[in-house]
Image (cartoon, rainbow, N blue to C red):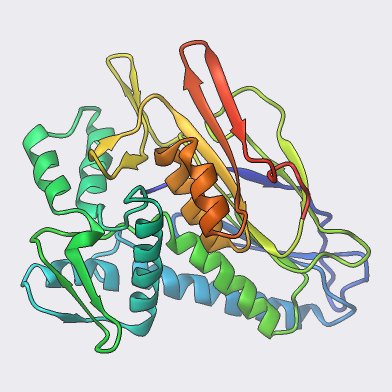
Length: 335
């Protein structure tokens, strides 16, 4: 499931040429993974170059993850793995790929298939449909949907291999790789001694220790489907935030709005628009939860509260009578 998210960050920012004053968090920006990443660091009085080196290392980690998992790149491990699986035998995979596939499989199990990274062939058809402003060919969609499903992918954790029982399986890590990259970037900053940090990737967040003298980082969360409502304000630390919604990447045909979000059970784009925001223990969990919630609907509250240690979800749907908003009990709490 590919997603679009939009979360506004409110934080005092500033740069110093030599030493960082006690009240001035540093901000670093760079394009990556098809979006814009911003790193904010609340540092003690250290040389700006030390913080910049940490940010560079964090951006390098993000770029490495993108190079491995992007399905927009023919040379990524994700793309090469899909093509290799067509041969029908076990394919060696990197330890990092194996670990993320195992995490994705656990999410697939927990959500009854609502979260599925093996629908890459389906998402490619819907991307083309959006570009050409027409629905996917029905036969092509049936073929792609038949090749999807993590039940067809066997992982051997000891041998570090993957094998597919079907031809045509392709991967789309768009609903997990960014959350993973955010967590990894925050971990790099922490390893460099800068745990009071926030990493924003296109609106999804990995939030570290709170800034000095504050309970947490102040964030504003916009509506995931563009409804005209004021942003939600939260003060957060040591958690992840992700939003999955149809704010900008769907398309309308014959009066029907087709989301870029896909229901793995049908291979069809979601319609009418639906969006979800999740606050979880880390960014990868929030990424998974927000994506799956758009497919699961209200059932997501029970699934993730039980399986993911109280992950909080806000679900927004367009109904014939207007916008319906459902919120899990812990979503309103600062943390």
